Length: 446
Image 1 (cartoon, rainbow, N blue to C red):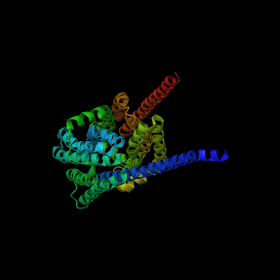
Image 2 (cartoon, rainbow, N blue to C red):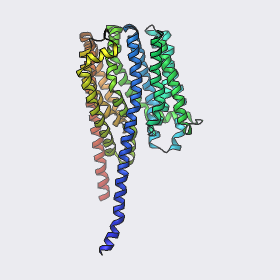
Image 3 (cartoon, rainbow, N blue to C red):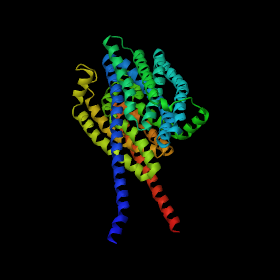
Image 4 (cartoon, rainbow, N blue to C red):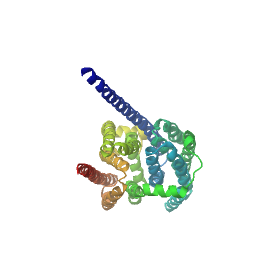
């Protein structure tokens, strides 16, 4: 009997051991993907950071304020592409077999080019409105190449190839900063040439990443059907993200209109330093959305929430160090990056305020990325509309009364409201999951 028991238990021991080994490999993969995601976002953020710093040190505050408005508009227009193409292709590539997503990656590149036409016209119109029509064409070129590269980049990341995406992103963002620095050194830097540098480097990076995806890119077919599928997956996200990004850009735009280009330039100057946290903050989405979507598809809501919590906790610890440095040494950092005689050296207190506000932003992002993975985009839209309504009410009087500090304070109220709304949505989803499980148990017992 004892021998039989031992023999009977042996398969169980092997099964348990196999499960333990599988869990260990999964955790290692999760950590490794998190490392490459942060490294990749670090390259992206570093390139953007260096580009904006070089421009701030080279051009006048008035021209830098103009750059802030146009570059901010590119970020808003990128939301259309991110919601209708990047978000759906991320879910499709992460949740389906390789051969099923190949045609959709090819179609996503074609649709990116098509969508860039109306977006480019918006860019030209806005540039003409603020008296920068000549710059608008180059901003359009930068927009198109940026979006093409973002499509190939996200397709790689959805397949957990952040390490491969790093190569193209280094070409795009670091070479972009290098070109802008060379132009500044030769006294040939202008806003037109800065946008042209973005277009050239993003275009080259898109070609490199397309070559990395060569086995998954062919002749696209069924574009109309594909666009309908993308629209169904991303249209609620589109309205939500547009609302959110218009809200985010409201501060520099209101400052530009009410306090002048110099005030908008000051906002961008301190935003650049807060951008030091972007490798952690933005890489969170590169990991949480595909990982949590996959975990939910395989193991359910609790597994998805657990994945998000692990990465958010790791990121939060890193951000405490980053924001601590910004809070303790704001003037020293301003002098380091903008020069000892810069007009931005008086913004130390504003940096401290912005650092506190940005921590709220990080909490919101962690909740948002989890809700994106759970495809709760419709509920997020309602929340964003409510919160942007609040922002619209408070930002104008706060900017009129307090200037830059008022704009940052308005953002803080906005971020706080978004955290509360996202937590309410997540709690509702959790309650629905519990109710569903109880219903299943009752039906089984019945």
